[in-house]
Image 1 (cartoon, protein in one colour):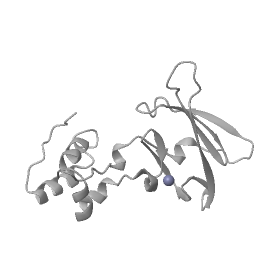
Image 2 (cartoon, protein in one colour; image 1 turned 135 degrees about the vertical axis):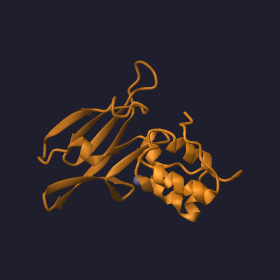
Image 3 (cartoon, rainbow, N blue to C red; image 1 turned 90 degrees about the horizontal axis):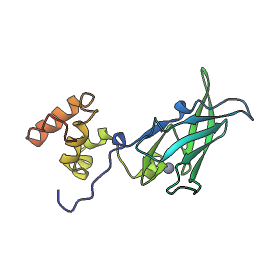
Length: 165
Ligand SMILES: [Zn+2]
């Protein structure tokens, strides 16, 4: 495993789904959502949401400074049951944004991979087994029990069952 770049797992990152912002359907309407509890591991405090954009507010690094903002376009899409909004990021439409390198990114520009991709030969090679252990040992332990068992069997070793952190 030495010398290989470590892949970041999307599921281990703080993230936000477009639905959680409840974008208004009417032009001119807007609301602000408190995200300080939703994303405590980030500097994101809130989001101002309109029908076609969202502005994320970051806590300033120092007192008296103005915090950064990050703006994404919201693209409405008609569905069978009404309107669904998606984020626009790097020219793509995505439902979820991930917090990585101090900012929100979509899964494409995040450089991270889905946990399920680590079951591919190529994906498994990219990730250190210890990272999988620590991820699966956390809150995701129950959810990924099957995957963990499969990986452990294939690797011919027993992954430890207790959380590492
Ligand atoms: Zn992107």
